Image (cartoon, rainbow, N blue to C red; front, side, top):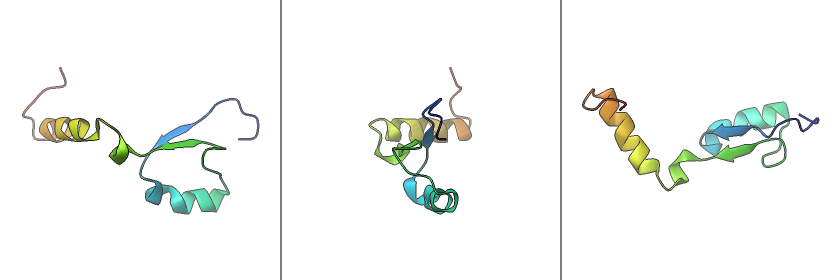
Length: 61
C-alpha cells in the first residue's frame, strides 16, 4: 500500500470492516477510502431497486 499506485475505495459499513482494518494495520483515508452506502444520498433508491429485482418485479433495464 505504501507505493500509492492507487486509492482503493471500499463500499461497506465501517463496522463491518473494523476487524480487518485492525488486523492488517490499515489506516482509513490514508491507505484506502470507505464509502458507507447507508449514508449515500441515493441509498434508499438503490435498496428499493435491488429488492424489486430480487423479487423479480422489475428487470435491470
